Length: 113
Image (cartoon, rainbow, N blue to C red; front, side, top):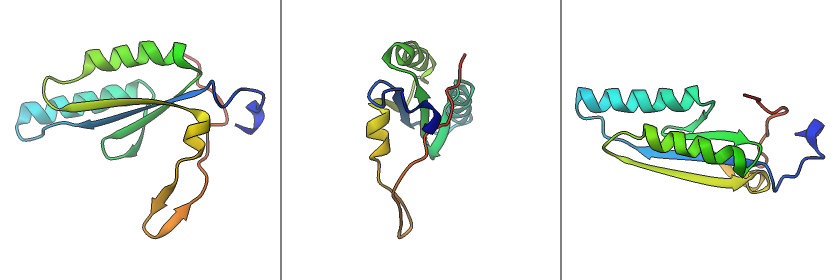
């Protein structure tokens, strides 16, 4: 967010959706795919399998997104939604194998919808 440095890292938020959905039957796999596609349509990006992230301008923008997620949750399985500030996101320690990636890249621009 180099160009947007005047914006508060404590105001901007991230939404993290973590889910564990059953995939035993054809119907369960279909519900899993439908929920995953819903998250992608809502501008989430995959961080890990079944963990999706989206950057938002603040809590006011996060609330309706979370309500839409709640309405799209399949009947079976578990979905957790976390909200945290951009500043907290910057403190995430990310490991890939034995390598440590010290900093995360925040988006250079905000997506406006």
